[in-house]
Length: 142
Image (cartoon, rainbow, N blue to C red; front, side, top):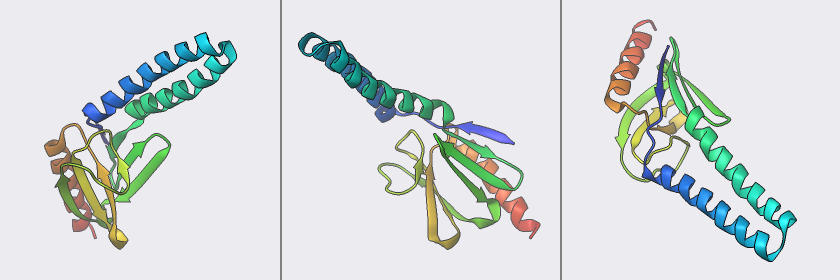
């Protein structure tokens, strides 16, 4: 099994900084205007959002198992058998669809029934080589 972490780009980092800054500013303003209870409610909402974003950083990964690719981000886990993968395409920019990544550029994996998934492994070229090798081995054993 080979593990690849997700590439992290400026949009994700800016989101974390923005949420943390808003949490601090709005919580302080609410505390001085409304009191501790309202401040805690507002702060809790921002803190939970921030905690979720941070958990994505640690949980977003791509595992190349013997028979399948396992992509996970947060509580979403997608397993794709190598035999089901039809095409791999590099993508830069915005992507609409299943996106288990923390970056804007990465790979679109097309698999059975016209489904697709966007991922962004840190070492893109090495990931593609490893994935294509496993797909080839899987197809040879069919």
